[in-house]
Picture (tube, rainbow, N blue to C red):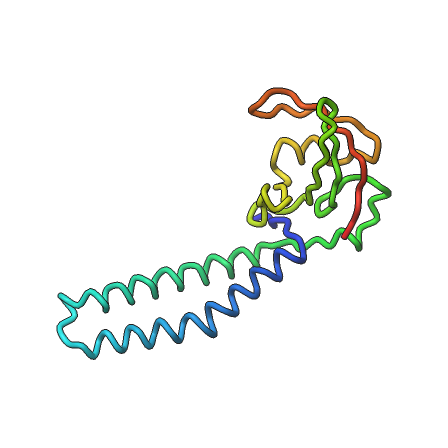
Length: 158
């Protein structure tokens, strides 16, 4: 199985969620299952079935996070010599050639992407067009709203 790129911050978030699910949620859910079990007849006990469902969801998410972390290739853009080129993990300030509107994105892994928070998946059309470019370059990107010209204003490695 191939490794999935992930930023250090993204890996830290997953590790924190994993720790929370194992050390906080798991004991709470197990206690809820035991409490519901003590109420008697399990066939018609809605609390018991809800607690078991919640337990299954939590355990599934724990397995999912562990798999993501085991397949992650954690990339620290500050440790990579990119010579001003846009790489995975770089933070890029862009200016729209038509409107002049500026936006800033960090190129991150699939699981970390959140466009509203400025986190752009490396597989997105914009990120694919930007990889390898440098400050001052202009790229054309096909978007649902048509072709956009974006100028690279700044590249930072945070």
